[in-house]
Length: 636
Image 1 (cartoon, rainbow, N blue to C red):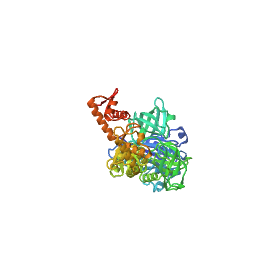
Image 2: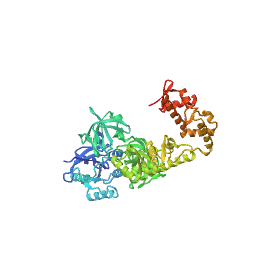
Image 3: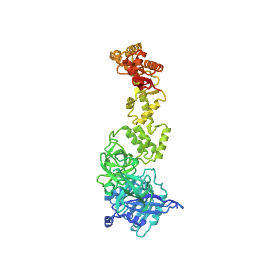
Image 4: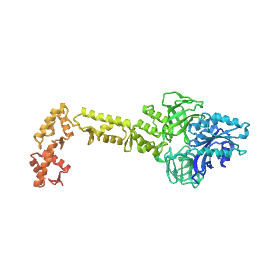
């Protein structure tokens, strides 16, 4: 038999319409586990069960549905939202005697905001209505023009058992048409239950999405960042080594205290996916069926995964409120940190937790509040809002906004796999939209602008300071810090420039055709310096005699900077040509006469001790000579 395919089903519907009773009739498991639920006869918190179904196709893999039973009472909608954050299909329950009720409508609204596009409707208590077809037609009318408009409707009764087999068959048929839950290599388990078992320790449960977890794996708890290790794990009440996406999973975590270290709303994930944030940029939408608008600055509860956090809504476009049926880009300014991915869907409810206000799709899970209405940020969000599932759009918009990004960190907090991201990178590079520089990706337009600015900056330096060899790289790096924030991208630009018309000389860059030249105002002073240095090649005047004014000082700095002259000490400067000549004569003298003293070499050069001592020290440093006692010998 083929491996079991796992999917998650969540119930939805008004209080007392029979959700929990139907789950018990289908699975044999009573999802109402709390004493208060037994006493009041209503579901208060989330309940869980499993249902194994045979596929309608011949000899295929069977299906295992992890069922999340949610409360229907209006006081516990926050718990309902915590249970439907990661579902593959919904079981919408409507009682035939009551029909469509307020919580039915709100639950449908929540499912729609969360992107649930597959459902089966269970028309319960069918034995309490006289007109079955009218009840079905009323539900169909309510579903019209919603994503669940074509959902099959199955009449059922747990009293007589009618329709239960039909409901299972219908669920199996719908599930058979669903894609497998995506495994994009980024596992997250939003925690919906936490408890401690004697002799075992802390156990958390949730619906695993995005990737697989393994026994023995190191994980972290977000948003706290606490580390833990998976000591054991279960799926459908069985110990497993690996659990994949679309499964109800229980994790026995070591190194955690159940109450202090982990709670509902936390996320079990891997460290490499980064940390939490206190600001999300999102697309906020209000259903046309809603009856409330959303005002700018409203304090709301953002429900994401299995938790919720208080936040303020700030619209990017200057508008006072968002009306029903409208959508807008907004920033969700969280009052405590939360961990989410780009592409995650959230529910916005009022702060008092009485009403569902809107749905939201996270477009940037690591936003910032500074520069709120920056045009580049707005353009990035607009592009993402139009294609929230397109990895190329997310990648291109990121680079257009930031200019550059590290390939190893690219879209880490997103619903895109490493392979999808790598394919998009290769495609955009082939199309000439991005430039690759080692681990750095750079927007092609930003790269072109940075290159033009670099060329203009170098040329401007040559024009204004022709006496300089070139432009210091440190200065150019500062000029381009905004366009190329990463050192690797700057280095790649320098390498690219040096392939053509530029050359790097030490810590400077210049055009190949550029030759340093004294400005007109300093040429006379330069000529006098050259003449003085050449007149006595091995015994030049002291520096204080060479430079007597500002012009001669600037001219001498130019000669030293360009390498035409060499500064042997604070007082002694010689031309580079004369230093080379002196070195050659010293080599010749020592070869002919053996080790030589300063006095010997001074006389051989016709120089003075003032010049020969720093000259020999320079030759020692350059590896030409070596001092042995009071004498110099040749090296090598």
